[in-house]
Image (cartoon, rainbow, N blue to C red; front, side):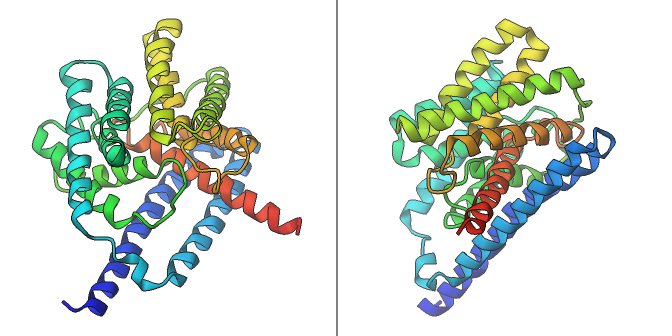
Length: 326
């Protein structure tokens, strides 16, 4: 294959991976919007308004990718194979800690993320991405071969989608979620469903989510410790402390919520320029978390997909507001 044909092929691969990422988030948005229709009228209004921000930012990113020189897409190289292996390793490590050692998905992913950031910093993001695949329940992956299939699909998407949506937190989880869902088309894994939480507990989830997003952004951007360490550290604290304070059921849900919002806090300062906007993204992530409880339970990466949709929406609204003020 000559150079020009290789460039065209990689552009097609990039566009395909971009569509997979955005389509995965859009599914959660649409389902969450439909589920929220029976609640107070303000909730679906907020969600559909933010969905408009999501669409706006998605179109802007698609235009930027289309206008970039084709040479910038030549990114399949020796490093790509290390990244593929890193995603696979992260998935196996997190699944082993979560299931075999019975530490649960949040703590397992946090351990893998912190270890990767310290020991393999160049591949920390890829390993952390794989750990989200490994957060899946045994009803989704009943064997390591099924887990590895999902991780392999996620690894390919990770490399292919590298130039897309850069700087938005939750992208790694979305990649993991897409790999999980695609693999389920080929295996016998079963997703679970959970009821919507009570309104009073929903308010608590929103507050914890906003706090988790802000705290992660503080460690990531303000203190400059990087997105992987920031998210994994917040997730570790949430996974250890909240179940002890609030009991195994509510504590586990709160830990998942905080971990999900920590992915929003992984966003770069170029994408989300103000802590205020990251707090808003945390609130939106909570709404998406609450109203997508009935679908895709037990799938690794769902929490990241929720955060990804939230920060893209807030990024779109922030950019739109900035243009109106010019």
